[in-house]
Image (cartoon, rainbow, N blue to C red):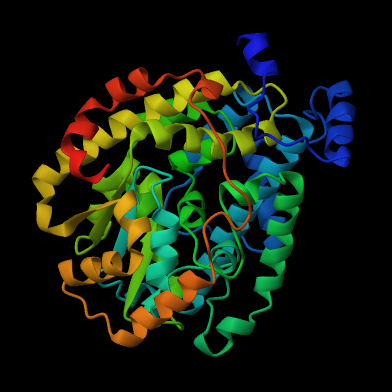
Length: 417
């Protein structure tokens, strides 16, 4: 790592609160907290069993992915003490969720009979308006889109009668409030609230075998492990979690979103063979630095030695091949299940975009649903938490370099970027 590049943090990175800086300073005296905060996977599993009082993990395998993740966090991520605590707490919560979900499935095996019919997935390059599109479509009263609180605390399954008053909302608000306190620049980069639809990254991370953990720390060893293992079990568990959430709180269809789905689209379509897919598009030279800045929020929180220029290279190596694979996959899966949406089109006329999506996939969109979308949009203007600023140069990248890596993508989707 180049010390000079690591020392020059991107201009939008905010200083961490004093208690975090003091904790990390104290932790450095004790080896970055290693003796104090264990990331040993077996200890994590035993801790989850003690915390939940449960021990049945169910039939789907997850331990190899957990072990690979924790090994990379230990050896690659250069975590500071706060980062070790944050990752231990996060992974422990995912493990407890698996145990409590398995308890629910044993008590109510009919959950596994719940039909997930024609889900709508929004994916494509990150930072292309996919959050806007998900929340807009989710304003349709007939649509079901997972909110942060229910993905963070999925057990017991939410119920329609108490959905809006569930006490887990308060727990999620408190946890997200701590994140925003820890990283005050985060809301301007990606607003995450307990009570609004959010990308289903939590559902992926409960299965552990997902590239989405790279958002939180630099873990190249885990990426190499994932490249040798498909994510089919991840999407099988993703579906189980949707069945849990839908069991007592059902609507006509799911609206789901995560750019990370593009990295495992083949596995997603195996598990959801009737899924419809919306791909959102934007110039890669605008997308890549925006995504880098999002990752940088977490990497500078969990490590004092993060390198923004290394981050730029890492994400370019992750995104460009993934989009080439999506283009190839479309040829074999059939174009009728895909729809392309440009960022400029979405921002200029979101309601016509919503109508085009529903019409394309043969779904009704009543006037009342469009009115609900307009009301939501009016109450959620862009940049309400501040303008998100970023440049390619901050992350050691140049426009020509990005354009070259995305040459196939830019040619295929020229009409939408």
